[in-house]
Image (cartoon, rainbow, N blue to C red; front, side, top):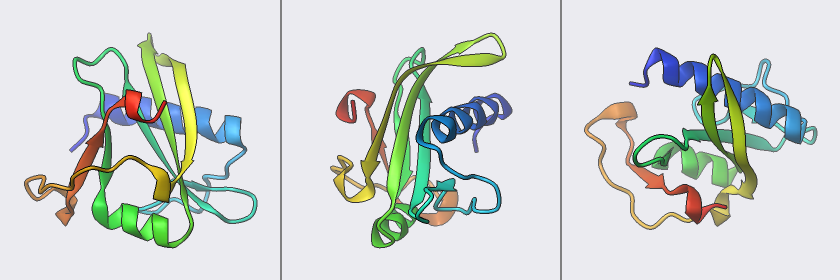
Length: 124
């Protein structure tokens, strides 16, 4: 389960992504999407801290499949923590069908779904 601080920075990254791409978060957040575009296209926002030893974007197969089937997109946000805020280093929107997934693996029961981890260099 993510830490309280990871949740805090993830929420800040979501806000930054919504501002940049003019996404709506309120009333649309579910397990498989964080926001929607004006036309209703679902968007999942993934964020990771560049200062971690091995920064990765974690994607769950079950939610990915649902997002892809709905014609959805991902926004990937690479950031660095700065005090109580963050600095966005890179941000990229990609169709769910175009993200680089090589292998799905069992993650020890979290969310009852397989997962993959994507390196920032694979999406930027």
